[in-house]
Length: 217
Image 1: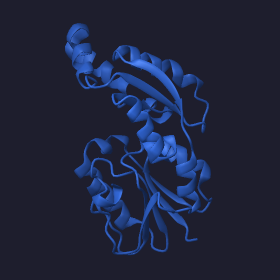
Image 2: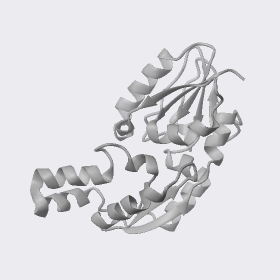
Image 3: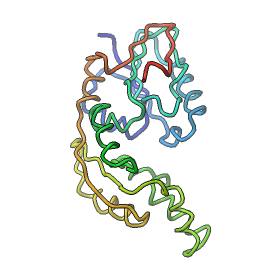
């Protein structure tokens, strides 16, 4: 198998790293890009274009709001999980993600990686809004973004000691008025991605082929 060149955000890299071959190269991108699909697409295409030849590029992303739609590589094979977002990567499959959202549509998912993003995690966002708008209006404004959520689910993927995360996750749920729950994740999908087990769970594009949104349906 060709050496791997991985492009992913910090939270996904943390899950992938234990399973990657030692000769893999890694490009870690900013977490917040997923909130801006057009910017994410532009950044990913630039990283793909800059990747070394003779590698297989693994994208540690899903469709991500359409951010992956239209991506291509002219010189390398490109592999991307057939998932709508990275939650399925943490849970182990599209089916596991679907089961969780079917169980409770209004679920906000957290992992250790999301809790450790300086200032961009939900606790950091809450603190910034309280500082900006004061202790009365700040919490109200912060909770507006969570109006459609009822449950906060902390995903324990088993790739790290999560003991220090539980209190932060519970605090997040309390601040935003959400019910707290911890659920087990699975490394099955990231292990398969790293090991080259690219079956129907993945899109495998040869040089010149383009990622299309329809392939994720």
